[in-house]
Image (cartoon, rainbow, N blue to C red; front, side, top):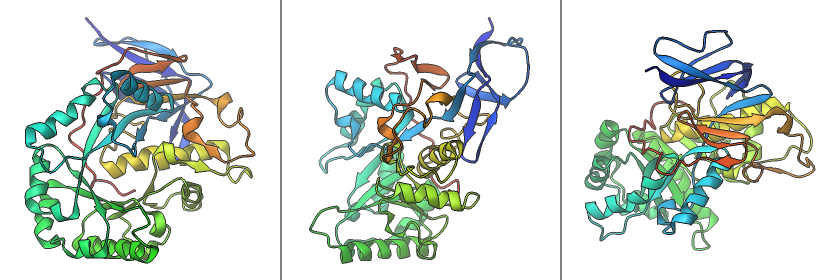
Length: 373
């Protein structure tokens, strides 16, 4: 019996660098072809259902980076509603950060991850550890559980000096790990301390060639202070407007900045680029760059042959035409997509959610060191 596939006709495919009219052929949950052609809808092995995407922009699905750990949501209905909010905004995958307690054994750590067995979306796990735990034994233990991204919250410059980078380097190289720096965000850490922590971290990771994501945008637009490959800056809502303009001015250059869709705020009161160009910049900042930073690219964050068929369908007539442009655009609240597809299956279509509980997969084989941003 032939496999069931799908082909979108007449849509405009949006990438990080442009928009083109093309059809997308999908089989087995993957994109198998992108071209403007008239191939027959039936082959010897696959029957393709035709989807009319005329008047639509087709975007790669966005990757959500929630600030609060979703696995801690105990109520099932609340969990599903949170997932639906992600889908409604155009997110087709997410990253959750596991925050294990010191007393937890390996089975208890694994049990904490069972909440996402009900996830309708694909997801990846990161783990949060203290600076004192950043040592070979701890990193190796979590690597065996499938973790390659480690979130470290630093409260003082002295904590960085206690890290033995030399012993970590062989494990970092063999396991292809990446570190996410968070600086304690409260009044106990003064600005001078924050600046010193950030600079010490930049210097150490540059010297030892350890790739890192820094959740502090202060040095994001100062190329001389950072390494163009090793240092990636996760932006907050206050800096995303500057970021999209920065990328626009250096459109074909490497720009190591990324931001989840929920944090994107853009001042478009005076149009400084075309609406289609703004859409490309949004895809680059909140989809492609995020996927590269967490090691999901090109499986996620791209519309290319071989990628997962995670597609956001956006009506052209809705894009920047039905909103009051006298205010700063808050993209996470606009709920623009008409339909959302994940792995070739409809998650949201014509304002209706499909029954997709448990369809999400955990992505193990992340490659956070593979691509320049």
